Length: 217
Image 1 (cartoon, rainbow, N blue to C red):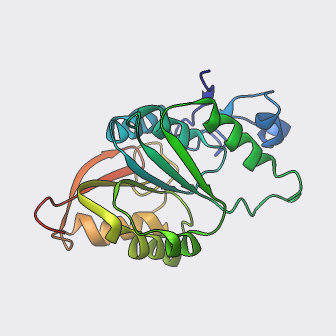
Image 2: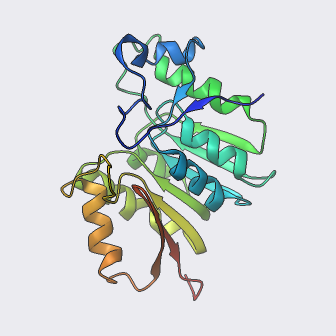
């Protein structure tokens, strides 16, 4: 069964253009509206392009699950997708509509397998010891939060592996700001060529994609 996703326009609200009371995730969980992606259609296509055929994928920050759906649809049939999100912002944890909406959406796609880790990324990393060929960082956007995700997780990315940073670049009509943590981190590490083991391969709206050098690990 296909999952309906409402994707964000550059000038829209963070819930993909949904306004008023329909923004609440309970309406995505109940099927009143599609899940709302916090990324643009162009970013959605780029995520699917870079995730295509990958077998070990990790996403930090799931929300309603729109980007996770893109990754699961595109990854290899034998792929494994690890989804990390504590879903801690719900006012009613016993219901947690965001969590329920995400699980419903991602599990409609039967490609590969999915593992949920409903905890913070700095806790989840303690249980990870395998290679990653696609890492998507879209969790805590503070300076310290995004740097911690990068510092703790990038060492697992295999040579030739991909890392995507969301909300990490300025673009015309966009919502990102120069002082956002992902923007500053990407500018520091990759636009200045200060990370020789990585190369900047693509920017699509606010999404920045980098690749690990194939020469050693």
